[in-house]
Length: 266
Length: 289
Figure (cartoon, rainbow over the protein chains, first blue to last red):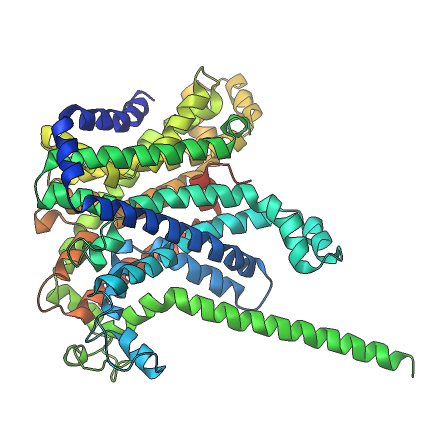
């Protein structure tokens, strides 16, 4: 127990350490960094697009995973693979698929006559960030849809049945009866997913290293670059404090949503 | 007969509607499955290609000839055995250390209603949200002070502490499901507190312990950022780091690279599927039910 307390508190003390080293000078340097504003904006887009798209897609996906049909087990196991597999390996594979010369994505796009000549999807700032967003959504979906699936399975069968028979039409019945019951799962999945997405490092690092230039960096990879490539620990720590605060906000949200007082009484 | 006719045909058409619906769902399900498996199928296809055809332009979807021996040759072509050894050392030690800390902690929390229990559980939960990425500089400094940079021990300690939240939560909920009456009966029979724990509660919590062990093992197996930052010598690098560095070289032997990756993925996916049931409840800590 003592050791556990020690470890739990240690994370907090690390942030204390971070604050200890970085004076106002580092914050000034950070604010004067010409790439900062674009990176912060991009991080916002990254967070919002990936989380919104993930949540919007995981609802029908969870529904599909819950429906009865031949091959459902196969679907459930397929969805779990990107969750279990190392993100580094998955991202490496996507990088290879998107390779301008040897990757098969260009092949597919050309076979479907979407493009005429091979393009370097990860090479130009416009397309590379879009590719990262797509991969980000694909690797986030397993967790959120499994949480929603658990939520769906917890809804009593007769309620689902009633929603269908009610005569209000399946669509209306779904939004008025089923979705409100799923809402807690939906909100918790969103917040936890937002934390994962915000912290996400391997996808961007493996596929583009934030490049070309700084064009696909988020504050997480940017902080890494400043610290371990440019060796400006102070400035990076200042940014890390910013990141830390963002995560704290998410945690407050999570605590508000999770009704933690009841949670201990189970 | 005339009356039965329409009823029967109605029955039939209902059946066929249901069948069509089932088939449509199956097809949609299969397409969605393929989308998720796509990167891994590509890896398999690339891993089986002969090395000379890897850089064909345009690339072929499937190998022209299937070279299964690539899965064995990867051990000679790449320092794959070394990476696997490091990954195993780190993952197994993380798992053991995690259990040693989390089992007593989970048991204590489940059985004792101490002051600040709820805040304590919350604090544990919150630590899960701070990924090592956001605390990397702090971790690096801390490890430098402790002289643990580029050591297995450093990585093991960090992995174990970042996975404690999940472990303690899962184990607490498992110990809670064991009725106190069983333990009371044992103590009436003269068993000491420790005997009760070791002989009664521990065996009953085996499913929870296995889940925790597998989860910690996988998390350590897949960990990247910390190892990437701390493990500078190749002999200390786990697979995730080794792989990402290998792709940076000018001439990448992608078929071997992906053969190795698949060897590293397949057991993990199987383990993961085996604990699927408990994952969601552990990661969302009871807030979903």
